[in-house]
Amino acid sequence: MKTIFGSRLVLVLGVVTILSLSLSPFTSGAAFKLAFLEAEDKVPIEDESEYNWAKENYNATLIHPAEAGKFKDDGGKPVVLEDFHIVWWHRANEATIPPVFLEGATMDALMNFVKSGGSLFLSQVAFHYVYDLKLESVQPRLCGPNVDHAISGMIATPGQEKHPILTGFKEAEVTKGFNINCYGHDCMSDFYPNGPPKEGTSIVMEYQEPHPQAWFGVVHPLCEYRIGDGIILISGWRFTVFRSGDEGCKYKDNMVKIHENIMAYLGKLAAVDIKGKLPATWGMVKKAYM
Picture 1 (tube, rainbow, N blue to C red):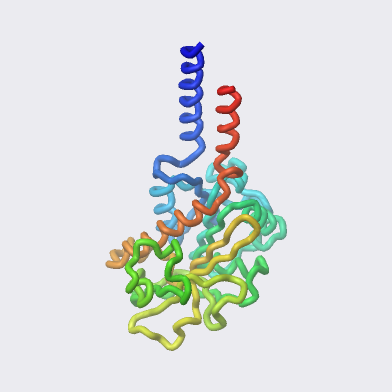
Picture 2 (picture 1 turned 30 degrees about the vertical axis):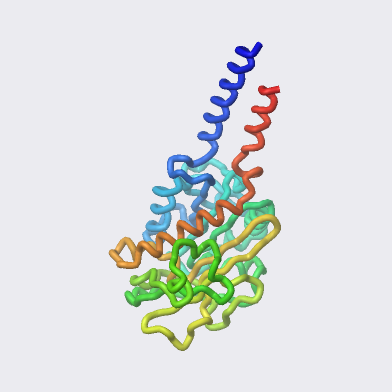
């Protein structure tokens, strides 16, 4: 009896291990599934650096809008947002929100994903989307490219010095600032000149060398919104610009570190029970064990 019981337990644990590996992007060591949402049929050069980083480090699945409220992978196969922990929509090629994203069905799909426990990351032009979703009453601006190679960085918004996104940076860096970008930006969005946001929580503020600039504390390029069981994080201005690092910016490690922290933070907050399908796996264990 003990031998049979032990054999069954070993077999079940083996099955669970295989299932777990098939349900998560473990090639990167991440404990979450990431979708990189691209509005265009082909990733434009302005979005390539972010997508490549997400693919190489988190095995991100590239997805696109198929029609209002529906999405597909890069091969045209339908996908469900709830199959992912994090959906990252990055847009830097045009300073517009595409019409399909303004359709009620698309807005509902993304909001339902968040409300049910998903994490939505909106960067650069997509920063503006919280206003389109009527989550934020302060209207962000939309800007075209400005590749001025100015040095820019971030400082914690007062009260946010211990935010998980700032993990790994020294106290002096968090409170006095650290540089992340020396490229400039492609198309983007931020709260200038109307910031700070009213409904969102500002995590960090911005600066450009020589600091301070007259507009310091107005742009607020990194904010979060808690919606239902999930979260929306927005990053704009010069904050999510991986082309800076690709072109040899000496502050590229800080840019990467911030986004590693963002992914870890959003992945931890996402509701595993509806995305990772672990409860289903555990149900199989209990059934076989009993």
